[in-house]
Length: 211
Image (tube, helix red, strand yellow):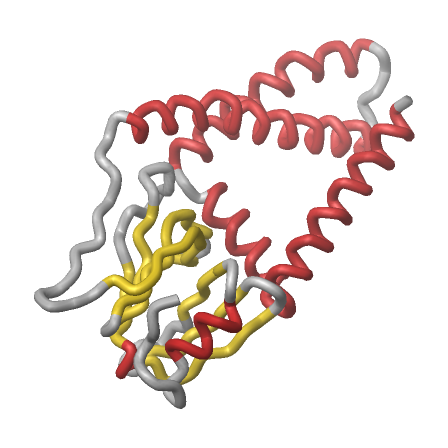
């Protein structure tokens, strides 16, 4: 049974990696590592992880030692189990508490400028400091922007004027990579229709048109 569980776990990991590769193309490794680093460096999660790991080790260590499982490899295995269970503890305890607090807060808003017209709004993601923030991709006659929903860690809206977009590249099936004049960082967007949006905001195209 343990072997079957390991195989199922590995199959799930491979399926997840395949999905990420399809969606993000060559950006998949950076997306995965960045998201993991973002989560584990949030102090509520880190504290929950530490508490969960310590509690797990306190439960399993005495029994393992009593059964003679006290070699270096045994301790390494127990440490791995403790770390894995600690992460699960943090997700199960810290996650719901954080989500409840966010449910009581107002959703972020994206303010249009005077005379600006919203042309299109669709579900999507915007990456900020490693967090893949869910929300809405907004396209106006002046800007492309992003409005996150309240259940993200970072709630800042983002936008770039169409005149400031220097390059637009599609990566994988869902990613758009934007270079914005005046910024050293690329902007990563996950959109449902990357080719259509790229054509509308590319520096070589005309102003966005209603769809």
